[in-house]
Length: 187
Image 1: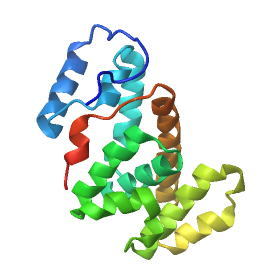
Image 2 (image 1 turned 60 degrees about the horizontal axis):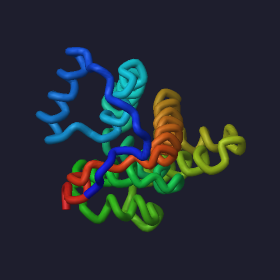
Image 3 (image 1 turned 30 degrees about the horizontal axis):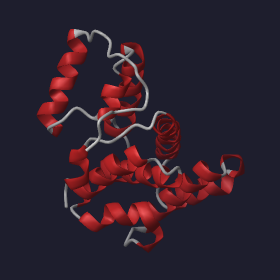
Image 4 (image 1 turned 30 degrees about the vertical axis):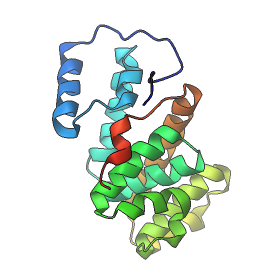
């Protein structure tokens, strides 16, 4: 479907055994190596920094479910119009929720989705942090606490939204293309 992973001509570095093993684990668990990892493979230090942060935010200990973290990724990526992340994380929302339409709803208008008050508060905060970060005030954090989030959860919401804002900008700047397999996942 795509003849390139990015619009840049960066040569993949010689990968360490640890990175090769990580890519093998991706193939085993996902059936593919996400193109974002292949895009970063020109510099193993950058790849490690990206994967360490991603794995901590998306798979580490948190009061947020994996689905909630993926929802944040999709909402932020929707605002930023990041094709790669919308495709990859939309697939994750479909898989984790068991609701194929939810991934598209998150992309188009999460406010029309059947979400809990907790999820709605979390996503409204992520939207504001993405669109108007300088306007976040104590009332925004208080609304999250009222919805049942701890201060640690608020940190995780903010960190996940901020990570995807950064990731979206890099992916868009280099015209990163998603793995074609994501388009058909969980449909």
